[in-house]
Length: 345
Image 1 (cartoon, one colour):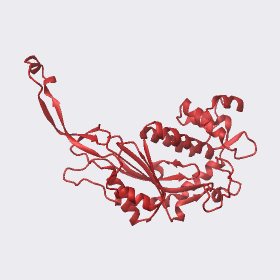
Image 2: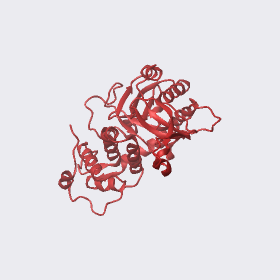
Image 3: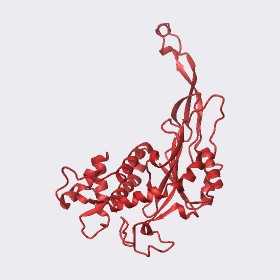
Image 4: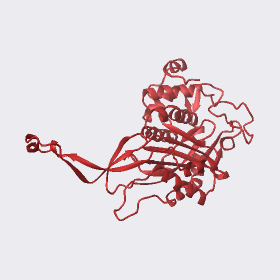
């Protein structure tokens, strides 16, 4: 997986308009079948291989990696990654006009990216303003003034758009609203069915033109500003929901995280500064951020984009659910510390 970042609009535009894109491109080729291995009588006659083209089938190759990505029908609409970026750039130009931050994860036959919109107060949630002056970020107390305009310790969530494309048949081309937490660089990927998304199959009617119009993404850009209140309510509820530290592994198991995830995420929770003076409790906001931190530090880099999506959906299900007391929690913090895998410094 390769990663690209954009910290201003010009950087994003240069990436979109580059004549020599670093992104993989795909081409389609005819598919042939070896008939000699299909018919016994031909094999018995010792005839040489006979190849016959399969109608209505194409082989889609990832040219950058030289690999077969997908076997498609003739209705398959091959949308290049670069075309998606150009459509997004046009949509941004026609709507919000600027980009404050962007990131692209390039898996080859799939790309996955985010954009946080610039010059838009409505597209930024200041967690200290939302939760009060006593709010302590999961990462700990700030070392600089968190109210400073240029402070990276100012815990803010930028609202924006996520986008994706593939030519391996694994996912549709699509966009959705999402958040990006600057202080820890975590993607906050919420339930697309609940918050808002657009997507389309890589198929078309035979008489239709190939391609992707900028309007496809323009609606999602407008939706970003409509979800702010819903997202803020979710964050407030999560920060108010106390979670005893000894409950964390069971909470994760309830939301389909296996033992290895439970150990690593619990370690991240234990490394956070407790949100209150007891030192024995955390809250659901902290557990959620420990989870997304694990996904963005390890899963996104070491697993497939599809695995990442599964676990992000589990994480959002966790932050929007009630926390129930488990049947058999850890006995004490010492047992929990023995269970946990602490993050590398």
